[in-house]
Image (cartoon, rainbow, N blue to C red; front, side, top):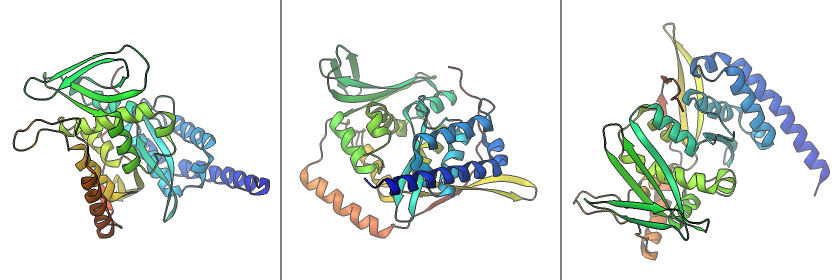
Length: 318
């Protein structure tokens, strides 16, 4: 181990950490515009600097990407890199250097769902070896789970009940969840996929399920921004201030492919019921890989741009 290089990196991270604090303070107007009343700009700043202290690599990230990810969490009223598990700031090594990626957490999805007022009940659960677990799809769908042990995970399911009485659920095998994470998440080898794998697994299946739920504005926006490199600027037009958002996905092709992957099991247009245990064959996997390579070449520099002013609702009472 090169002690001199290690010390140099620590000094650099500390210096840039101070730069990040200065940048946050210089853009405090945007924080005041974005934050809900329950979270003060000062608290969000402390949370951000604590995240940098715990992961000094964040201080080395492109400042615009760090600020964009932090402000995104602020606009959504979610705390980052805390035990609440609502959202995460993750360093991502891209071709343009180290970037900060915004990642939505399982608890953050629940918070936004309940905040919308459309859900009476919503959750995801991990099934373990030894549990009694039965499910089937169709007109007379069944989902029964009786936990009985702490064995290895076998399945993950997500369910919701709407305030108007509608219900739905989604079941994935643990292998499918892990394959999804390895294929579509650049942060799979570090961050919450390693420190809180069951929480990330629940988020993954819940996100797939919510594609078929009534759309809630904040929840849909958060899902769109999930795992993106985000740049935000304050723009004033005719005396009206708005926060302009520019998003570049770390893996734009995989963002699209992930949607297709999640849609493999639901009822199709012909009315056939979904089979949650369907596994991709070797030939299908090869076709998927070839298609991904073609898409990668076609939209390698894909960027999604949007102008957004987030209307933050009051925090849902817990």
